[in-house]
Image (cartoon, rainbow, N blue to C red; front, top):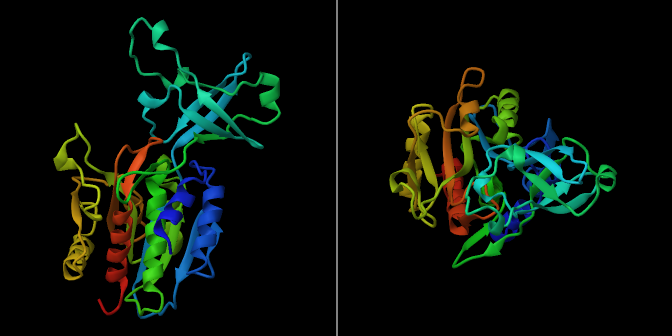
Amino acid sequence: MDIRSTVVSLSETSGASGSESPAAQLALSMLREYCPDAEIVNGNVTGKFGDHRESLPSLVLDAHIDQVGFAVTYITDDGFIKIGNIGSIDRRLLPAQPVVIHGSRDIKGVICSVPPHLTNGGSEVLEMDDAAIDTGLTKDELEKTVSAGDTVTFDVTCRDLIGSRITGGALDDRCGVASILYTLELLKGCSTAYNVTVIFSTQEEVGERGAKIGAFAIDPDIAIAVDVSFAYAVGEDESKCGYLGKGPMIGISPSLSREISNGLIETAKNSDIPYQTEVMSGLTSTNADRYSVNRCGAKTCTVSIPLRNMHTPAEVIDLSDVEMTAKLLAEFIRRDK
């Protein structure tokens, strides 16, 4: 499995929360190589890995397939598309961003920007209610293709940076999806200590909704939410961040299972896999929060890939972290670990 091409192809496929089908279909085709019975259920991509035995505890590997984006609210008489946010969007970067409107066919546009010459030196952050997309089309032309509720995503492709770093959009959390796929690649032909089920869940960015459904249906004993977390950049609090290229961030929190956190840390140490810890004082704001209180509860932990510029079209990861995350998960799951 080529990690880079997997991450890139996943990240460049659209799938805003509630409209994940293109990304989900691609992920499904990739997952079926390892889980032939994989299917899409209520939007979630799910599949069972290997033979499941009644004597083994069940373990879920979860990564969310959706991305932040926008929803069309209406079209003005002048032909501008008004939008609302899907998930948490950094409004500071909106002006002049290229986007794609996913109507009955894709239409490219750009978020309107007032030139600095006309702002009297002002630097106010654009309110979402004031954001609009210019496609160059009239209202009548747009209404043939675009409807209220259609999703909009940033128009961005991945680019290589120095070493094994890349930048792009929707790396949150398509890199997590890729790391789980690589985990399964590493486990091919191996005996596992758990009955493993994979779920690429929907609507994480709007309240972990897909994970809530998946957790109830699967009812695992153990769940590991593979997501992204904050990588240090200039101006940020280093104590609250991980570092690119230094391995997966293992979650520690009162809302998580310390048993699983310690097990992952021990696995990393025994396998000489670089790792970082991510201490959270409450909920994790990831799908782990849904699994830990599902039915009678599950022993839950987060394993996060460091990422810069979260929820922007210029997210940055180090592919070595994706690989090390997969190696950690594979060693944790392997029976002879």
